[in-house]
Every structure is written in structure tokens, then in C-alpha cells.
Length: 257
Image: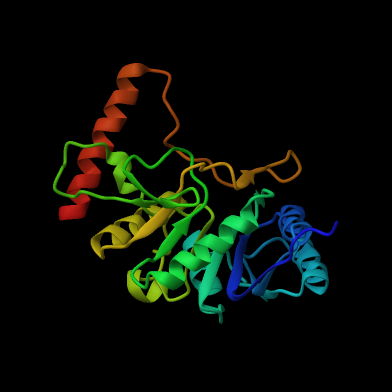
């Protein structure tokens, strides 16, 4: 029996890419295998090596995507900005090239599109995270509204992570409301800046509670991750506690001042 076809004509799939064409191929092939199609696909490349750009051109013939290139590596912020500017559909599904959708994802994407259609104040629907968002109000089909209380400065700083660069669906006017990604800074600072903008401008979003049930993040020895986060747990307990306290103070300070 042929599996259901999932067609999303009003959704642009935007993939940011840097020197991992095999990972990109795996991602796009995975969507094909799930019978999941989009109104357009945009691949934004951040000045990959010439041999990898050749592979991107070959993959373009197979998957029929818009390829947005640049002559100089400008960082993830610029890569997202130029990719978003090339989008022509109402909604953007943003996925980095090292992710792979799971079988359930197309069905949940249908619900996400419906949520955005029915709530004009909704800005984003998140599909993946490293940890559960701390304050959630269920809205159905496994999704919950993220709630943020700025007045309670004593609650966990994890509440600040309403925005993340992990796979999500957003309105293609997202940058018009929240501003461009900060450029000329590292990945963490660019994401942090967008997170703060999302909070200050009263962004509204949903979070899929089984936060690793829709995507796998996959890296290989041939195409390893090009980025390492700095926030992983430190083996020294006191240093770890100090880092958490620092983030708590900094996040609350930055939001207010």
C-alpha cells in the first residue's frame, strides 16, 4: 500500500548548508521517502569548498532547489538571512542539513500549518530541542504553548529558550517582526540575540513535547558537526552551578536592559 502523500504548497523548506553535501542529500531524500513535498526548497550555502559546491549543483538537478551561494563565509546569521530573503511562500520550515525527519513528522507538520493558519498571533512552531521547555500549556496533537513570565525572575532561566535554531516552522515574515539575525558573531551569540528579540517583541510559539520524536540529528566521521556548543555540563560541580547562576543573572539583565 502506498503511503499517504503530504503536500505543503504554502511552505518553503529552507536548509542552511556548509560543506556537508552528503548530509544535505540524506535530508532531502528523507523528505522524499516520506512523500513530503513543499512549495519550494531553498538551500543557503555559506561558501562551501569548491568541490562541495560542485556536488550542490548536481544535487540541485535531482531535488530542484534554489541554491543561494556566497563567495565569502559570513557565518550562520548571514546564511539564514540570505536564505530567508529568497523565500517566496507564506511559511518557512527551517532545518539545518544535519537533521533527518522521522516517520511521524509530516503528520505533525500538517497540524503545525493548521495552528499557524488559525492563530494569526502565532509566530513559530518548534519541533526539536535538547530539553523540555519548562512552562507549557497543552493545545493538542502533542503540541503545547510556551509560556514566559518575565516578572518572575527567580524561575528557571530555561524559560528564555522560547526561540531556537533547531527545526521549526515559522512565518516567512519572521525577520520583518523580529529583525535580521546578528551577523559577524558566532553561532551562539546570533541565536541568543534572536532569542532576546523574540522575547522582547512578545513572540508566541508552540513546542512539540516529544521534542526528539520528530527529528534525528546525525553526524558522521566523514561529515562531522562544524559547531560545538559551549554550554555542556562541566565535570566540576561548583563550576557548573556558577555557570547556571551566571546565565540566570545575564538572561534576566539582558531582557530588561
